[in-house]
Length: 401
Image (cartoon, rainbow, N blue to C red; front, side, top):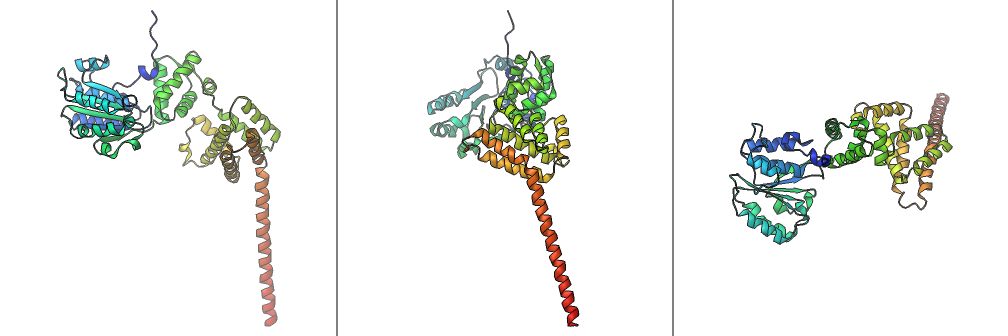
């Protein structure tokens, strides 16, 4: 019988604090609280989706009931409590999905369970309530008293993606932990480690694209990588990733800008037609091209180049192109594209709207040059008139003398 396939998000879900990615400020605090025996009775884990809130809640629940903790406050994974947790048979750790169990009756049932002491020699009964912001107002109010004065053995871990929806009376009773979005660098490193374990060949530029697309959500990044690996027979390449994610490649923006600099309107229109035929919407193109000019602006100064969330090879290409374009053109192009993007929704002919923006960009250099010549002419004219006035003053003064 073939081995059952397990998605990477489940297979490589962290089981210990030291394997949680990108949340060192959280895991360090929790481990210190366990080592110093300073555990709060109620925690609130909040932050974006897929960053490890529920994972950390489960690790904390497992670790505090472990009978053979390591000196680093990690669970042993071998004691009866750890084994029952791994096999989902523990009577001391309860998970409640507040999205589907959000009524006051569900909370009252939970409160009834809290009255019973932990079983099997465990120290704590842990209640993990996921998506806690989905609880009704009545359910929150029914929960208040228990949350404020729980039994000594009860610990509540609440998790939410929408902290602002939690009642202030609940927030004041919890120790709050804010989870960060996972950085691209941490995501890329974690994906690379999994690829090596699974014997998946990969290109770093492809992992970079996946990290960008996931927007700090590790679960999304792992799901995307699984799909691409299946699609391309365990080879996560840049070209496969661009094709699978339907991303407009950096190369198109570089080529269009090079053509714009040549003032080759026909070439620009042909390139945009190629992009349009591939199914990319005009607003997506405008947004991407705006970001391209923003990256060019950043590439001019070594102090801010680290703000670019792109592969190193592409950074070098941006730096090279930035040296060929005047800052005035970049700033005016950003203005043209920003206006086009804002008015895109109101445009009746979307394609024509984008093409008109490209026409403006094609002849933007001429407009900048004409404006510069006019200014120089005005300055020269003013300086000449100023010198004439000086001469006339001198002549009148001489005549007076």
